[in-house]
Every structure is written in structure tokens, then in C-alpha cells.
Image 1 (spheres, rainbow, N blue to C red):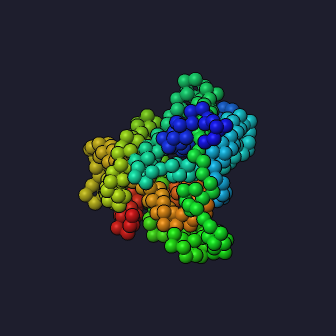
Image 2: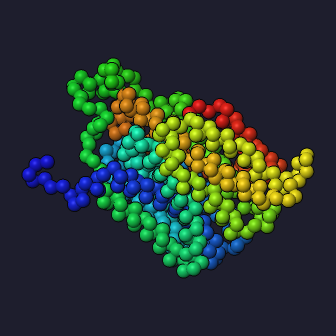
Image 3: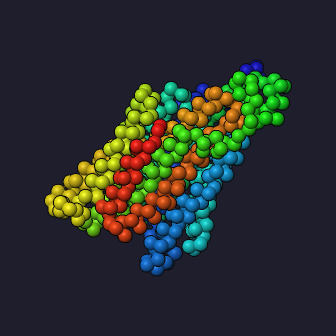
Length: 445
């Protein structure tokens, strides 16, 4: 640093790894929070503010949420590609957050259904970009030795956002009204923007920390052959997705994320209707059930991440899938017509035990696919720092991790709803359990 150069205010903590990881985690939390935030408010918006016939509420709700998922699915690879072309994560994320806030305001103020849908599409595009850049920022600043702990902690906050969004919006709407409810979402986005403005990324050149010093010969070889490995030999240029989608561990991570997403969205679709018909449980008990599914992941996420750092990923993941298979089957037993008879007494207790067990099994599995894929990318870049270009491949990695999750969120409700209506809840759970069993026996992580 020269005499004329002065470090910005708070440079040490603003550029610290812990603050950058915290800022990225706040962004990830805000996106999961906003995804479910609108669900409890939608009926009020459609019926009271937009004067839609109540008979159409379910159809429009399903359409809006499906559009959100499809837009995120389609747009993620494009945002990821361009995000990896820029050396700074801060500016793209600030722009994405501004767009997300604009979409949120448009949704809240929409005077017609079509403007509401337009705002939802705009918000989905911005949220997809925020998620990709925030995850890439997280991946850029994770130490190899603490990777599991950091990812586990981040996923705990992500899990909190999944149920906190609907809970906060529903509570504020009922107690304080429509605009106070939306003020919570806008406050969170403002906090997110503030964290982004405070964050100072460590300065690095296009290839700092990745390629080291290069000479003219290396530059020429890079231009002609794509990149040069650490051995000094030219390597033919291969695209990021071609490398990833031919790597067996990446495929295992994608599969893990896809099936987790299918299972979680299947619960969202079938569980409330099933327990209401079978046990007469209304919204409060159903809310407690979903809370129970999330709590173990939130509480034990950092501990399980530390366990992965010590013993590896494979056995915790295999054990988690091993428990899920019988627990999903057990979930379908109460109320089912089985050869040995119906479970007349104690069905509620069996169901609750299965739910609690699934919560702990999900805690072992949540983030496993992301952890695996991040580890592969880090290993490949350690072997050849220029393999994914001068700024790395973490944004495209983020888009790749989001892809199976979004596919699962779309496919899960369609599959579970159709199977449950056609052959029953018990056989739907049996099919999901069998699918998980085959996954456990074949996957290698």
C-alpha cells in the first residue's frame, strides 16, 4: 500500500471471510424466504384486492407457483454463464437484488392478475440470479477444511427461510394487515442490499489464486488450445457442462438433490390433504408437522457439516437414505388397507414418529449433493486452475445445483399427486420408498 492509498472504513472485517460468507448466506436465506412468503397472502390478494372468484383461487395459485419454478429453471444456466465472466460478485448481486425488490413491489402493488403474474415472473428471474451469484460468492470463500461446516450452516439458514416465509407473512397479514406483511419482505431485501454494500471482495486479478504467473508461451497455448494444465501440456478445451455431466460424482450429487426435492415437494402436495382426511388435522397441526421436518436440519446442520469434513460424505449420506426408505413406507401405513388389516389405534403416533425420523434423515441428506459437486469443482480447479476459465466455475456450479432442485419442485407435485389420487397414499409412499432404495444401492458419493 502506498502513502496515498487508504484502506476503506472497516476494511478488515468488511473483507473478512466470515463477513462475506455471512452476506452470501443472508442472500440465500432471503430467496427461500421470499419463495414461500407469498403463499399465505395469495388468497387475500386474489379474492379481496383483485376480486377474483374464490373458485379460481387454487388454479391461479398453482399457476403462479409453477410459473415461478419454470422461469427459475430456464433462466438459471444463462445467469450462471454470464456471472462467471465477471471478476466481481458484488455488482451482479446488487443489480439482482435491486431487480428482486422491484419485482416484489410490483407483485405487492399489482392491480390486476396479469400484472401480478408479470411481477412474479420478474421476481423469479431476479431471485434466480441472486441465488446463483450468492452461492458462487459462498463457494469462492469457503476453506477446504471447513467446507462441510460452512455449507451445513448455510443450508440451515436456507431451511429456516423455507418455513419462516409463510409463517411470517401469514402471521403479519392476520395480525397487522396487508402492507405491514409486505414490509417484512422489503426490510429483508434492504438488509440484504446493505450487507452487499458493506462487503469488500478481496482484490484479485482475472487469474489470481487460480493460474499464478503466466508467460507469453502459456498465453499463446491458452489462446490456441483452451488452457494449459499444471504439467505444462496443452489440454483441448472442454465446456463446463460437458465436464460436469460426464463426471460420475457430479451425477450422483445431481441425483441426490433431485430426489430430495421430489420428496419434499411431494410432502407439500399430499400431506395436508391426507392428514385432514385421515386424522381430521387442520392447519395448525399440519404447520407443526412441517416445522418438525425442518427443525433437525436447522439445529444439526453445522454439526453434520463438521462430520462430513471429518469422515467424508459417503457414509452419512448412505445412512440417511437407508433410514428414509422404511420411514416413507411407515408414513403410508396408518389408514391403509393392508393384508394384515388396518392400523385402527395409534395411527397418529406412528405418523408422528415417522415424521420425526424423516426430519433427522433429511438432516443427514440436506446439502449433500451441493457439497459433493462443490468438492469436485474445487478438486478439478486445484489440479488445473484454468480449467473453467480465469474466474472459475462457481456461478455455473450454482446454476447446476439449482437445476435438479427446480426440476424436483415441478415434478414432485405432479408425480405424488397423480399417484396418490390414482392408487392411494400408501402406494405412493411405497413407490417413493422403493425409488429411494434403488438410489441408495446404486449411488456412489
